[in-house]
Image 1 (cartoon, helix red, strand yellow):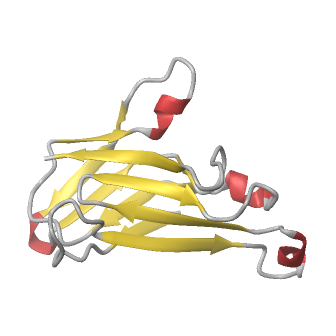
Image 2 (tube, rainbow, N blue to C red):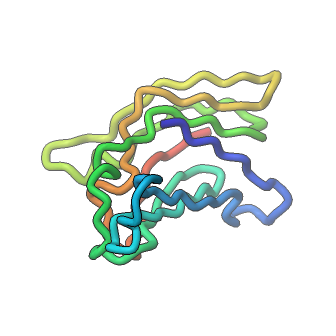
Image 3 (cartoon, rainbow, N blue to C red):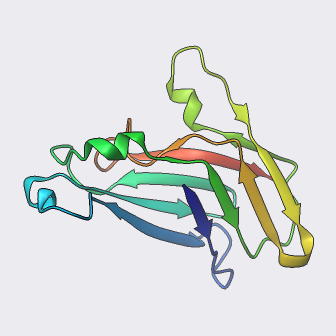
Length: 137
């Protein structure tokens, strides 16, 4: 799954520059009426990407547990990162920060990040902010 981030750079430093909500259900049935759905909000502050589960934990869309963000494109970036770390792996026993692969494209001011396995819903708890990526400049 590809996540595209389009920051609004007009705010003060430290403000959330981009946010967006992802809603998933099967798209075919009325299972969403039986809480078979998920909804998460992604936040990007210019250095960190985080996610928050917006629906209570009673909402169980089993297929969301198999969905992962494998690629991210962040636009409107004037600088090339020195490193990007996958912070989500910290939550697992024995895990350390994992560097991810990225390319900075100066002509389009884009950071293209790959080698990810960020959760869409798996392991998230309602209302709890989980840091996913740390971008170092």
